[in-house]
Image (cartoon, rainbow, N blue to C red; front, top):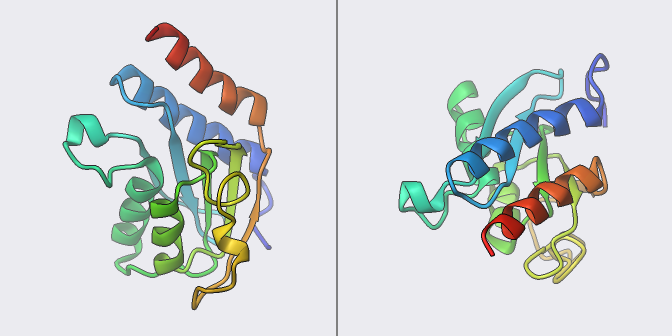
Length: 155
């Protein structure tokens, strides 16, 4: 994968964490995402907002994909990288496949609803007409901690 070069995976994940903080401040589950072009340009960002938006599809990944697609005026985002703080769910994996994302980078695993390595391994099943690479564990401790803090504060 050739991402530009002045920014690391940690840099982009930090931007996704900033989006997650916006979700937490809005009372939403703190997940954030950003989409980066193959040239290393930020194309879109998003955070969870299904409650406030009254939209069950308004997950961070979907919001970032929508913003990136609007930015380039195309629903396909070939060779782009999506960074997300938590392992994506089934719906979000499907959205990434439809958008033709080239590479997925996530922070912490999501043991209950994750659809990349934790629950189903959708990207490894080979049933899609598009394949993307993926890696997890980028700033995983911080990404997991923001979730734990959020749920601790709600108990």
